[in-house]
Length: 381
Image (tube, rainbow, N blue to C red):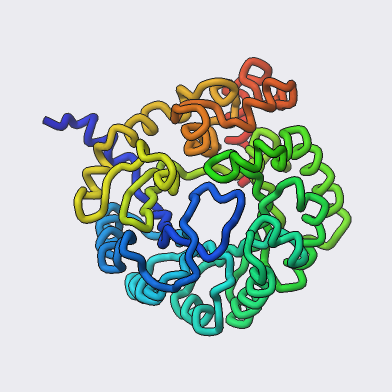
């Protein structure tokens, strides 16, 4: 028997967004990918992928739970020709759409279809200002020129394009020129991602090709200084919120994962907390068509664990950080993959803390959580 308090707890968490990993295949061989997709240059639906009707049936179940937006990513979503059926479905049902793509498969046809589906934003991976730097990470010759061409097609349709730069040792000296290229192509913003040591990125870490925490923080400060001397352009550096300053008493640009309101649907029809189910079987919650998504959302023990313990019972430095109720420990998938628990500290933050690099002003014993909440609550919106 479900008690009233249990029912209230269920209803407290609304499914806002589905992260749809539309294909588990990709036409690039990116050395850092945390989804670890299979390689294919063939634009077809493979036998081990869910067909479009199955995926749409899953999205229909999610709509009944309140889902209003879908982030479509991969693998590479445009490697499937039935992407156009997905776009039509979302347009007809007024579902807000965002896309992540390497843009190498985007022609005028794809760009026009995205425009007609009222896509909010298309995020495109671009890791260098030229083919040599970009392809060091992406692993396929010709991918730079095709990405640039795809971006141009997107901009011709007036689409909002964000450039995503994955920061690693080989491109750190080229990030500023890549931002300049993004600006010249008409991108609306740039996001610089640091690499989490999940799946393929672990091999980069073993070869010392991922920057250390200190190197990343130093690079962040240097980049901010360079950009401050130029005309305004939206550049987000995706380090944890604890390392960013409050702006005029406001939270400002503090990125966090919306784990309480998302589900991931994988290309093979599996359901997870995000894309982590692609590489961690224990975080697969069910399968479309076999398991009722409402039952998963309301009752799955992994989701219950997250809701009951994140962020109040986070471990390590995340449990001491005054911003934990805002960032929720940032990426719980990374914490689980590397430390075996959804409550483990984020590796970046814990390493910073262990090395004396974590800001003491963000630690609860140095600056009380209550004081921080009062500061944020009274700051201008």
